[in-house]
Image (cartoon, rainbow, N blue to C red; front, top):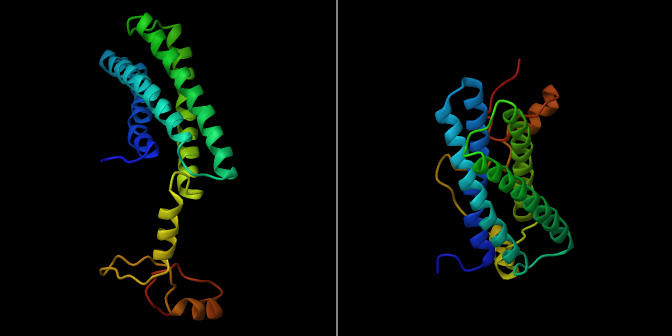
Length: 196
């Protein structure tokens, strides 16, 4: 099967809606600044598609929440992620409803209010994405314990890289000497050289 867990489905679904919503805000700002109706129309359609997708993304996240192994730290971050994701989704759904009600065309008095609200929503999207990344990349939320244990064991084993693919985890031989001689250290991967 392509995706085995609810968390994998959520990861697959949750990228496109935020991108559409962010692009919608950009289209609307540029369309307003240049007075180009085509960009405003693009902002409308990406908003509608993004808001619909965000509902699916939230639904998949709620399903994933009850299925992943996690501890207290992940739980706290996950609750914040959920709260902000729902709030941002509701906000963009309301903005989409407003635009649909106005048949995609906002008046000159409405547009500044809309742009301000959409910009705040865009900042919310970035924060929700940050929280989601924190769950996975800082706390390994959503990774089953056996897979995590296997990955940790594998990290301690030696492996080889093709030329140019080194991790840069070890400093070059001259770094310690350079620090002693000149009072500074070089970034990993700096070729050996002499100081004046």
